[in-house]
Structures are given as C-alpha cells and as structure tokens.
Length: 191
Image (cartoon, rainbow, N blue to C red; front, side, top):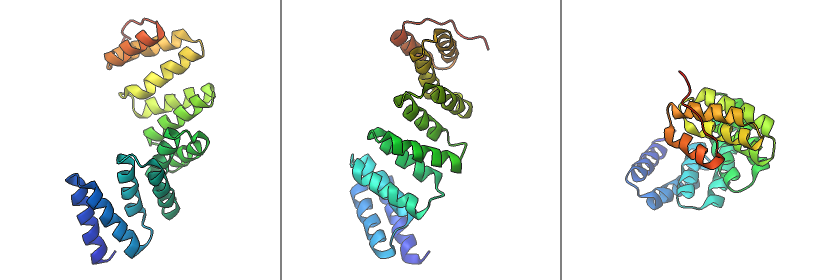
C-alpha cells in the first residue's frame, strides 16, 4: 500500500467521521480512479451510497467488493442485506449462505437468511436458521421475534408462547408487541 493510498484513505475516514459523506465519496472515487478496484474502497463507497438511499449503486459496489475479495464475509452479508431489502431474495439467499460459509459466527447473516427463507415459505428451514441466530446472539430480540412469528404462522402457539415468555425476561417491550400482534399471552419464563 503506497503513501498516497494511505493519505487518501485517512482523508476519507476523517470526512466520514465528520459526516461529510459527499466529500468522502469524492475521495473514494479518486482512489478507485487511481488504484483500481479495491475491496475496502468499494465497500466504503457502497456504505455511503446505501446511507444516501442509492441502493442500486450500493449493490453494484458490493458486487465489485465481493469480486475483489470473495473471502470477505461482511461483503457478502452487506450485498445480501441490500438484495433482500430490494426483494431479490433468491440472490440474497446465496449471499447470506456464502457469508455464513466464510464466517459461521456472523449472526446477522443467519438472521438475513432466516428472513429470506420465511419469504420463500420454507418455515422449517427458517426455524433452524433463527435458532442458530439466537444461539449466536441470545440477547438480541430480533431473531426471537422472527422465531415466534414463524411458530405462529405454523399454528404452533405453544412454541410462540414459550418464546414470548423468554423475551419477557429481557425484552418486555418486544414480548408485549408479540402479544398484541398474535393475541397470545405468556408468563415470564423461569430462569
């Protein structure tokens, strides 16, 4: 990595820290022009595109990111996240699976994969995936919430009630939301 690259990288980082995203984007563009495709630069620019609501540009840059560095689990996750958000769930599933293959502990990729599977109606697989997400991130309510919703959709209220009770122990607002949405009531789970 040469000195000019380092200086521009630091300049872009400082601009991002101070919320000067358009200026940071211009520096990243200059870096790409001078140094060619670089996974760090592309991922940084993709992130700025996503923040600015330019999803298609962000997806294009994340595609280039994973082409530059196919072993970067976060690149695959970020691409999958934006694809899922865009409704491109088949491709998103592949991205999430690639991220998990590279980093089995990437809980967000498990969560994203679970969402894709729910949308595909593959609830049995989704349950296993959300369970893995909750094992990796037991205090995050998101996987638990989705797991309860899948059980409700599968007409398995006892499992949903068990999860709601579990959530009451550390995320009572999410548990209350599930109770309102599902009509199910649960006591606080014993610890």
